Amino acid sequence: MRRRHVYLDLLKTLAMVCVCMYHFPMIQHTAYARPFGLDVLCLRFFRAFNAVCVPLFMMVNGALVLNRPFCFKKHASRCFFLLIGVYVWYVLTQVLGHAWQSGWSYVAENWAGILRSAQYLYEYDGIGTSHLWFVQMLVAIYLIVPVIHAGIESKDGQIQQGILFLLGAMG
Image (cartoon, rainbow, N blue to C red; front, side):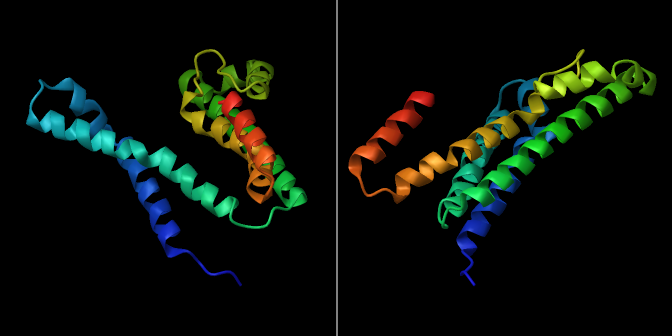
């Protein structure tokens, strides 16, 4: 059994707390609605401090994913189920958003368009999906993990430089 890295658990917990605090409505709205003063400056600083949440979360997950032996079959299975989850979540977002906004009859009449929007991961008739921006980033990272892992495992400097160049060109 592998040893648990408690510091990574703590960093991941900190990242999750920062995500919650970053999206905390009181901070988001009051920091921009009131006249500028020390309290507003503190709220803006607090929000900026919590903006480390996504890079920190991705760094910790990268440390966990890239620190173990790579199995392509297991990785492909994870990618497949992640993509299924993404599509299910997009469909749920669209269906529940339209049901909330326009009623279930609208969903029944427009189900084909809603499913088509999930197929291409875009919004349908005003129900946005921008709150799921991180999911597309996560899928992209999972798809390039084999390339990153090959660069880490390689002892050949030219292969590592080529992979770094490729990743830099994609960025």
